[in-house]
Length: 283
Image 1 (cartoon, rainbow, N blue to C red):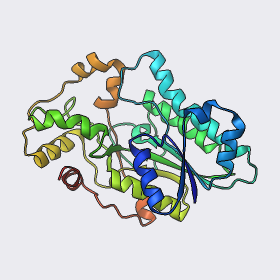
Image 2: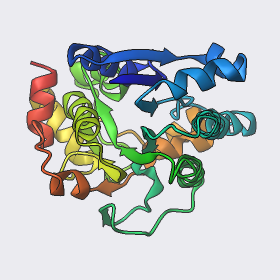
Image 3: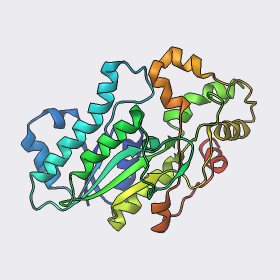
Image 4: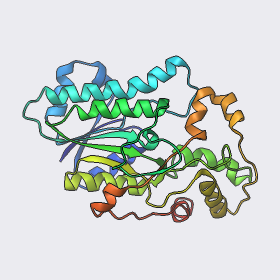
């Protein structure tokens, strides 16, 4: 298949591109130049594709000024809108559109599957709602799969890599008490889910998180155990707010999501529980 990926230079995008090529697909990246250049060029790229995957978006863990909150929203919604417009410009296009979202769309305090229609009302939930609504405009012309990602765990980058120095020194600990949900997924399972959905041409909402839920304290304890280090240094919420301001919400809040849709379709996770996933990543 001919597959386009926006955000192909990011942590997930790079690995996904490599594995799709290894699986025999032709993969083309969509960058900023494509979005800012002539519309016809992007329209042609999209029109000649079989699958479009959107991974674009400014980093969430940062200090949220009003201007940066606008960048978080626009980098997701406007790129999605542009891709959908390109699809609509090719009336005969009937491909698969896989658009990213996050489990942050859910409220805290419960365990959610895709069939639960309750959503949160904080800033991150509002971003996800707007993002998903824009992607859904590609229907009925395209099949639309929404991937609500948990925290992606990978040895080469992301949240795990940032935490490792402190934990290896024995200075790790739970964040803000550690009771907030921690939905996560091993990078290998995430990539395999993309391949699975593409191969089966599935659509709908998918929680991209491991089937065994945990919270921040559970993740912290598992990481300390794998590294053979104590986890006696909790990180208070006020300290994170001093650094990130409102953006600390991305670290002090969390959700628990179950990948019911994937499981019902027959997808098998290689790493369903946090201890095994961290052991594999840090072996």
